[in-house]
Image 1 (cartoon, rainbow, N blue to C red):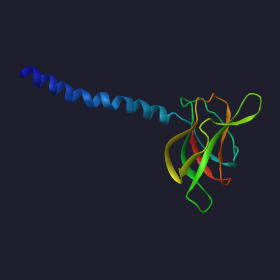
Image 2 (tube, rainbow, N blue to C red):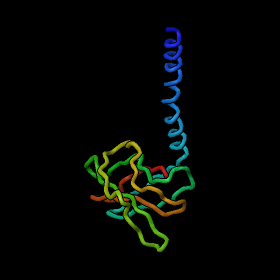
Image 3 (cartoon, rainbow, N blue to C red):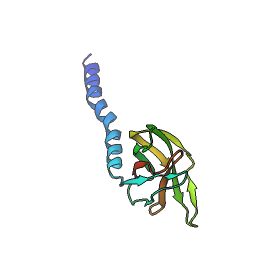
Image 4 (cartoon, helix red, strand yellow):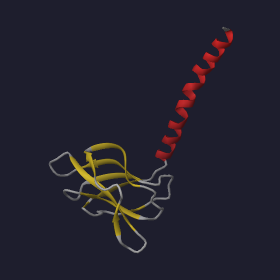
Length: 132
């Protein structure tokens, strides 16, 4: 009986610690990401930012504001390859509603220094905040 009680007590103490450790690591990597504000282009990149030398390996959308009447838009990530050609990311266009969004990945595994931007499907010049 005593052994069961001790094992249960140890489990009750250590389980919350084990469950919060990965979250703390994720928060640390999220906070290490560089942040930028961009304007979208119409079905192509708008304003351009170079991928920062941070622990983030993606172009993550954290906030969008469609400047037209609707409160949503479709967005895609674009990157420029070493030969100077712009490419749309493999994820394509993603529908997002105005306001904060939960770290939506538009480009994955982006190398430091790579030029990248965001395009909107229906109208240009939307405001997009990214972490990269």
